[in-house]
Image 1 (cartoon, rainbow, N blue to C red):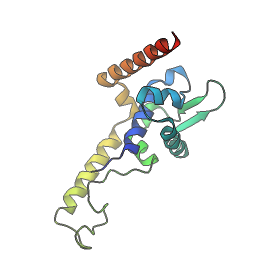
Image 2: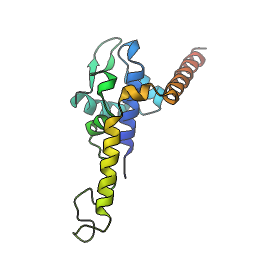
Image 3: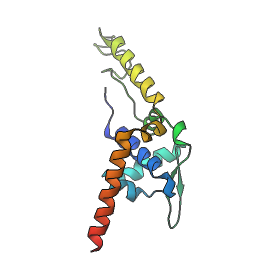
Image 4: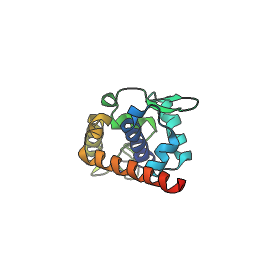
Length: 155
């Protein structure tokens, strides 16, 4: 199975956006700072997420991005789809040409695994992730680090 950095970063950025929604629009530079993802990479991801209808952009001072839907209606698989990623455990990308143009012995096993992963990610929403104690603890730590960095840089 191959889920690339693009898919992982997109899910991470969307979760960050959801966790900080109560503060209004979130700038990509804030997400970049908290999640240590390059700003230019986030710009590329958010262009795709906006086209897919998962986020809305707000221009001007205090602008940034907002979720286009409630966190309980955005699944992890939607985020992965939005950035043109696939979760596929087969070697042939599901084309059934794994062994010199024919189906290999374990092709259907890997197809079944891909379907299970897809089903799992489809059932996990941003809201569910937001409620996880480990996620809340990590988000708090990230906020504290950013605050400490801002205080340290202003002295």
